[in-house]
Length: 268
Length: 358
Ligand SMILES: Nc1ncnc2c1ncn2[C@@H]1O[C@H](COP(=O)(O)OP(=O)(O)O)[C@@H](O)[C@H]1O
Ligand SMILES: [Mg+2]
Image (cartoon, rainbow over all chains, first blue to last red; front, side, top):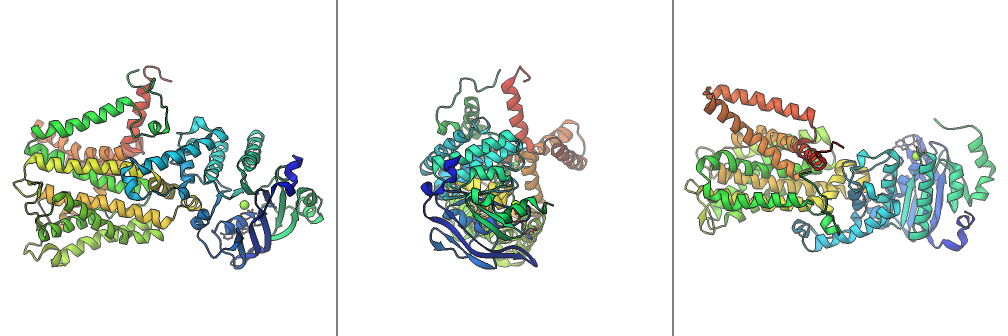
């Protein structure tokens, strides 16, 4: 996977930049003065021990948490305080560490919901259905079917997702995020709790997504081995602070990182 | 294999997502509709109108409305009776103020007015959920009934405090008032229910319906995928109240003819509709009809058997009926918590595989 570690050729402009983000909950500092950027077309990893502040970082980017200090820049513009659905409309999609699917809906409907921000027919056309609403539905159905093919989930298209096994649910959640055709895809531990085979599938999907659709991805991952293979650049957090930032080979040999991972374990 | 989809392959996404994907189902639905529109009006009599068909249609409309809010959007409401009262009083004021107005316009406008009120009472849902929201809607229920009792303007200062529906027409045919023929009141309600059931189906299968279900299933994820909780919840309240308002207008103007808020639109009505939706199936259009049928028609059937068949005293029959229906509701909740609609789906799945068990 040597070429994926060479970000010089494939990545472009800065898509997202966080500047000096500080976030605390009461007395607990979850993030301290974190700055990093995500460039267009790259796979960016955020790693660190449990409780390091990785999920908090994604929650800041997707608008769930509002940091006490710092700025988020997206596509060259400084972002004001935003609600999560406004962030989504700007073109950011994500998955959650704990699966957050719409359990009562089918796989197909979950993915169709992913296209929410791109559907616009008004309520009167929707009430009539025939005409613009149906046309729009079919148009988006086509894109969703492409994603269903890509992920190989044709057979569970009509199954309520609550009935699917864990690994499949993770895949559907990825599909829902992918269906948004977002400019930036945030994946919070996409491989957590998976067996080896499922992990390999997931890795392949992430790489293919990045290759075929050119999707920019920022992902959190626990398994440092997987991260090194997958990502173009890695940022390492520990206790809410940034330890290191750079291409995998550099980060791997960073003394602070080695200490954090091999030294005292923070896992709870 | 009596009932199956073999040979009924879908070659386009449009065919795949139609309401009744199976040919047999489609024929069945068209058959029922043809019967309801073309046969029933010729044979309907006063008994069938007043005891069976009108109540079934009116309460189906209410159940459709509550199902949108509670079944699809996951917002529990105990204010149904109060919202029906809004529809009823709106229709009364409209009928009195504009005697020439077509009754369809009256009912739909009453629905729209109720929708506005529904949005107002839906505002707390932006902050509170579940049990607490139910309590807030309960407050709406009591407030609205109190309001219609207290403010004489709503009942045009009538001495009794009641409202009664004057005779009003649709294209020259009376559909309200004592002289309205059975076939006309029946067809009037049937048209409204069929049209708006179709609309409900369309709204719930598209973007709007998905935004409701997304909020219901996982509101955090809904937001991250681009659903505005404010829009989703308030639109559910608005559209649900629209349906419930229309059902209130139909109940008062077409079915009852006169009404008094405490009795016609009390909290027991809120629970009645909630039971319909739960027994029929949350998040199912068909379920709304099955639930209404069960809670309206079953008591009629039981009464006929106990009073007409066995000659038991009417008050004993009424009490037994309550016990029996209550017991059946509990049984249903235990055996099939997803309601009659799910029961029907499973039966169909079994029929499809019949005679092979697997
Ligand atoms: N909503 C919250 N309220 C209070 N503390 C929080 C909240 N979210 C995260 N934290 C705290 O912030 C720190 C970082 O958590 P998190 O971002 O979930 O770590 P990671 O994803 O790296 O495991 C932890 O100490 C956690 O307890
Ligand atoms: Mg985390």
